[in-house]
Length: 437
Image (cartoon, rainbow, N blue to C red):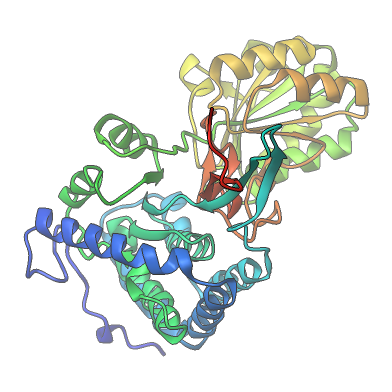
């Protein structure tokens, strides 16, 4: 049995390294990140991969210690009354720890985007131009609850040549410390600075405000969490932000959908894991197909323990369906609850999504390819799908190894943010003593 007493819990607003006031602490972390980023930018792919291979090995070797740290976090979270979805996001067991290590293995296997030439051309004067991928530089990641983000974000930033400051939620503090120790030890084994990956050593929320003002040291802030966190970061950050708003995902069941497929896709999209951002929150059904398609899908959801809320047309079909209010259409439940609306075909579905959606992930279930193409063209979200569960909205499922988040922005990156999305480019110009007349 794992002894819990080996890990002393850190109370809210406590700082592990209390030697510096929080403004000085964060400024020092920023300075060390800046220094480490120079070495990381020049590191070879082999050195970065060696650090990641060692980190994955250590995560496996220290699995029991990581789970023990997570037990401390889980006990504190239950005492604070965190809901079931948050507890599910927070929980680590041996299987999930192994999943983190496998995610790092996958990142090691991916091509290094740094140094890739993405365009080149020659001008009439003989100048040779090229655009080459380079790291963004220094990134701050602010996130809630999920300790696996610590491993994913740290590994992705390392492989893409970006030094990173991680600020996980207070509820995952002990778990994240144990994971970051593996990453830093992996860096040391590869001869790279441990400060390439740093974890904010305090649960005091004042550290977030200071982090958002590190314009001299950070090039990008990536927030990953609930609406309140995103809104605070957007309002207060002086550093550019790559944001992930709500995962208010929709599944539209078309008149030409195979009923069995629709039942299974919707059930998976909603109930596989209700607390992830790719979980479906609203089901849209073609009004023409309500009589045939609605009941089998709703039956399956209710069998799985999902509460169903619907508009007047849907409720007339099934008295187990509760009344949906306007607030339901804009709610990311992260719980076994789904809202259901009847719509007028693809156009009606697209209008509903444009009105209420968050631009994350939407799926159509239909056997009609032309209808699917209309939906995929009309719906302007980061991820659009055909005959697939929205739970595939995940960097690992995209083949990116992992993700630092799902961007609902329209600039720089959209959808899962992996290695390539953590790079920018520089313009390289080569001449032969060329001068401008």
